[in-house]
Length: 116
Image 1 (cartoon, rainbow, N blue to C red):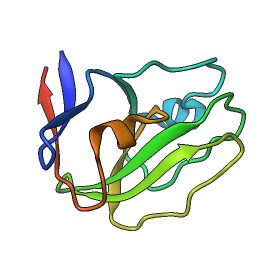
Image 2: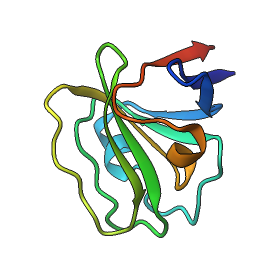
Image 3: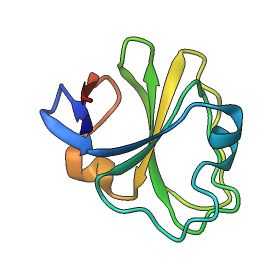
Image 4: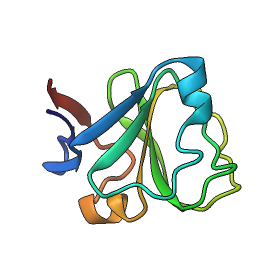
């Protein structure tokens, strides 16, 4: 099992990580799903911006640099929204809304993919 861990807060952000590593899987993202559950994350790589077009539910999003530092967050991002581009971001993780509040994750935190 692979976990995404917030090393700065000693908390687990997700223990069910789905990689979206191709153009098609990143483009599709979470579209067409009716919900995602706590503990799940879609991992988009490479990625520097996201949208929630055609989605049915809000998500929390974190933008992560090459050295696994959180450089941006979006809490409770509702459908039909888009973020700006982050020039220093390589990884983006999308979670069930409320995940960032529940884990205390914020800009500057260090993350780690653990296990596998």
